[in-house]
Image (tube, rainbow, N blue to C red; front, top):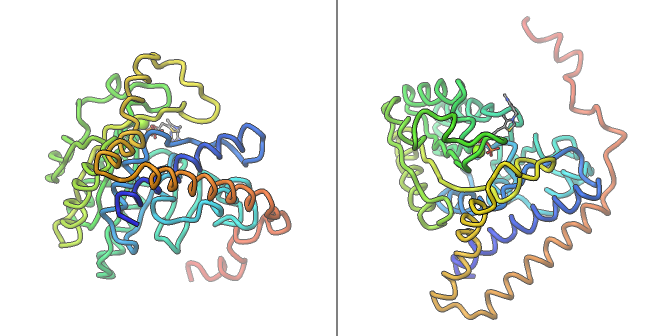
Length: 323
Ligand SMILES: Cc1ncc(C[n+]2csc(CCOP(=O)(O)OP(=O)(O)O)c2C)c(N)n1
Ligand SMILES: [Mg+2]
């Protein structure tokens, strides 16, 4: 399939999967809440398009898009959210603490900003092992105001770690507008405070994201150290499933929806000469895939009998610590 159709398929897969998460949540079939990234798909797909499969990704509570863009199977993602044994963490990670080692998706962190230091540590590991990987560290505008962001950028800069810090500035941290609580207009300018390159990119434009990410990833891989990218984007839904987003003006949401990355990409595909039937076939295939993924998740057993397995270290292991 042409790369541009693959990007369309990937963005749609994320959107349809997240819509399905919302559907499952409304029926009380998921475990816990979920934070949808609908509207932010071009960031996830654009960055992954510039990365190697062996690179690591670390994400946030809003990490489903990164996970699927990194190559995780949507059926097992849905199974995980529904607490089923076929989920990537046997249903114990859920939406907020999922990790998929096979695709290099290290973890989502429910504590805001927590992923930034995990990603920085992973980048130190990569550097010490000389494995040639790059760490893709996703976080939000709110997290960029936390201490861990500043400490991590400083350490990553001092050690010239192979990491790309990707701030998805979706304009809000829960109900708080970014510009009311942030000292700078563009978070990317904070890179200068650590002697790092920084760049602002249109997060609704997949190719712009891919280009900026490619430059940063290549620099990191070549030993040039970290970059801070800020992707200006928007979440079309509320913060979490318990938030209807009433604090945002309807006009504001409507204006951003005009720049829906999937809608823009579809128009681009048609403009590039792709046959509408081909585009529609991709859409139908993704619909069918997510339908089947939902069936798989709901038909899977719960992992009830083993709820505590893997949750605690064995006594013998603990006894050995510190000797
Ligand atoms: C340490 C910590 N403080 C507060 C929270 C509650 N909380 C969850 S998400 C969030 C805001 C996150 O905003 P941002 O970083 O912009 O990410 P977004 O949700 O917009 O993707 C807050 C305050 C938390 N999870 N962890
Ligand atoms: Mg935000």
